[in-house]
Every structure is written in structure tokens, then in C-alpha cells.
Image 1 (cartoon, rainbow, N blue to C red):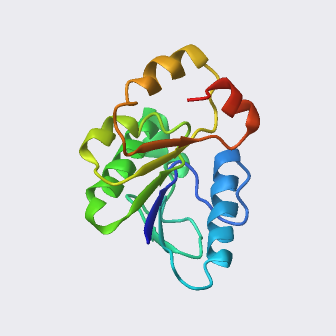
Image 2: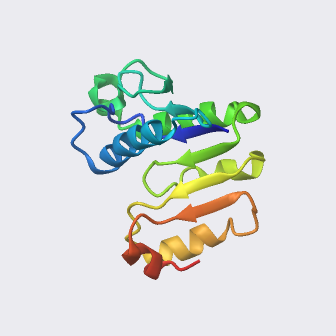
Amino acid sequence: MKVAIIASNYLKINKNTKKGTEIIVYDFVNALVRLNEKKELDITVFVSEDSDLPVKIESIACESSAFNPQITKTGKRFIFELALLSKAFSYQEEYDLFHINIGDGDIALPFAPFVKKPILITLYHLTDLEFAEKYLTLFKKHKNIFFVSPTEIQKKRLPF
């Protein structure tokens, strides 16, 4: 199975990562590699090129957007996240599953109608339940979208 894990272009991901979601992605990818003894998974991570992971990396930029003054001074980091998603989804014929690990995955959802493969979205930061219920339910009809919560608290907050 070919899996595309879509992380963030904002911070590089490596053993020195100190920020929440990026730490989880780093640990998750390394755990998958350890568990993948039979090489049943072919994993690619879409992330900044300066990341250091034990799998193939696809990127849109050679450095994370947090360390690029042209991006940080314009406040256009969000555009680079969208570009990373766009690049990943443009390879949909190559992957069996897309696993979104950017914030709450909400920025990936507008791409969903154009992607035929399963999209698994890990919900990390849901703080505004009213927004989440309105926005996430817009995509309930798409049978290729699946949500997972990393904590029991989030599962209770949004049981669907």
C-alpha cells in the first residue's frame, strides 16, 4: 500500500522538533517504519525539504516556511500549506491513502471532491466546536473522507 502523509511546510520535522503536531508526525512516521518490517507500506511524507525522516520526502520548498523571511514577512504561510496539499493530491494515482496532518485538516477538505482515494484526517486542535460542526459536516457526503481524533476528549466533542 502506498501512503502519502501530508504534514506541514511550516516547520521542518526531525529529531529536534519541539512543536506539537510536528512531534506527533515525527514519532508516527518513525513508528510506522519500525512496524513495516515486511515492507507492506510505501510511505512518502509531504513536508519541507529540510525535514529529516526515514522515508521518501516530497516538498515544495527547500526550507520550512517559518525560516524563510520572504514568507514570514508577508504572512503567506497558509498559501504554502495549500501548495503542499495541491502537490500531494496531484499524485493521487500514485497513492492508495492520503493521511492529512496539518492542523485540523480543514484546509484539505476543499480538495476532497477532486480526490477519489481515501483521505484520513487527524483532528489535532479542534477548539471551536460550532465551526467544526458546520464546516466538517459540509463534507459528510464524500465517502472517501475519514476523521480520526488522537484523544478521547476530541472523540467525545465531535462523535461523528
